[in-house]
Length: 561
Image (tube, rainbow, N blue to C red; front, side, top):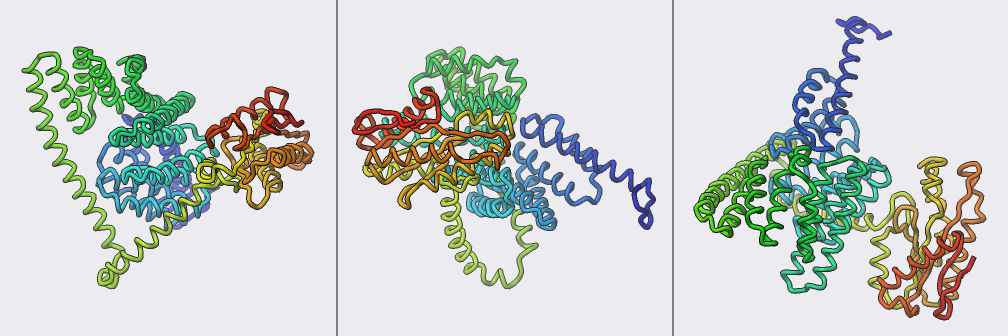
C-alpha cells in the first residue's frame, strides 16, 4: 500500500509509480535500439518516456543522456551537447559517477565531431576519471573508447591503441560483444590510418604489417557483431576489412566480400548503406569496372542520410562518369559536388558556432568574476594537470583490472624493448570454458585471480607476470638459462595443480598447460619469433594431454610433466 502524502492519495501514488516503471521500460528499449543503430522508432519512444518521467531525477538524467546519443548520431550537435551537459549535472547531483562518466564520454564524442578537439580531450579525461572512481567497467570502457577517438584525431596512435585495448578488455570482462566489437573496429581504423601514413612515407613493409593488423581487427569486429546480431557493426567492420584488402593489393577479394551484402540486406542498416555502396564503388573503380561503379555511387547518393555522404558520392560519380566517357553526366555531378561542398562547409561552421555557444553559456553559468580574471593562469595549471593525468591513465592502461597483473601490451613492450636477455613462459588454463559453463563466470573470474596470485608467487623480482588475454597468462623472465626457465614453468604448473580449489567451488579442479622459449632457442630469432615459439609449445602441451610443460633444454624440445 502506498503511503498518503499531502495533496495526493494512494491511487495517485500508484499511478505515478506505474508511469515511472513504464518510462524505465521505454528507456531500456531506446537504449537497445540505439546500440543497434535502429533509429526510426527512437524519437517517438523518447517522447512517450518524457511524458511519464515526471520529477524522477534518475529517469530524467537517463532520458537526457539517450536524447544526446540520438542527436549526436544524427549530427544535431548543439542540442546533443545541451542534453548531455544537463545529464551530467543531474548525475553529479545524484552522486552517480558511472552515469556522469557515460554522459561525459558522449560529450567527448560530440565535441570531437564538432571539431573542438581540445575540449573533447578535457571531457574525455574527466569521463575516465569519473569512471575509474565509480569502478563501473562499462563506463570505463566507453570513456576509454571516446579517448581513443580523440587521440586518433590527434594522430597520437600509440595512445589511441592503448586506450582501445584497455577499453576492449573491460568490455570483455562484462561480456558485452556489441561494445567490444565497436572498439575492435575502432582499432582497425587506427591501424588502417597508420598504414596510409607509412605508405605515404615510403615504408611499405611497415605499411603491410599495419594493414594486416587492421584486417585482423576488422575480422574480429565482424565476428563479434555477428555473434551479437548487430548488423550495423557487421556492415561497418566489413567495409573496413575491404578497405584493408584494397590496401593489401587484394582488391578482387574485397569486391567479392562487398558484393556478398545485397541491396536488400543493406535496407536493414540504412545508416551505413551509403558508405557501403561508396566503398564498393571505389573497389570497382580500382578493378576498372566503371559502369558498375557508376551504379554503386548512384545508390550511395540516393542512400545518403547526410550532406557529407551525398557530397562524397557526387565527387566519386563525377570521376566514374568521366571514366565511362559520359562527360555530360560527369560535369553535372561535379557541379553538384561543389554545391554540396559549399553547403557542408557552411553547415560545419554553423554547427561549430552553435556548439561553441552552448559550451560558452554552460561555462558562464558556473564561472565567476575571479575565474575570468585568472583564466590564463588556471588554463596553464589545468593543462599541466591534464598532461600528468593522461600519463597516469596511460600507465593504468598497461595493467589488467581483474587480476592486477600487467596486460598484453605491457608484455609486448617489455619484449620489444629488452629483447636479448628475455625468456617467455606462456600459460593457459585447461578447459576454462568448462569452468565458466559448469560453475559460473564469477567462479571463472575467481579462478583467474587465484592463478594470478600463484603465478606472481613463482616469479622473481626482475620477472613480469601478465594476463595475456582471456584465460591465458605469460611471464617475461630476464633470463636466457633454459634450465632456470623450465624450473619456473614447472613450479607454476605444480602450484596450480596442488592448490585446494574447493575454497572457491566444491569439486573444482584446475590445471594449466605451459610452454616456454628463450632468446637462445634456435627457432626464436626475434622477440616476435620467441613469443610465437612459446605459444606453439603451449599448444603442444595441450595436445599432449594438458597439465604439463613443453619447452627447451640445450636447444632441444622436451616435456616436463
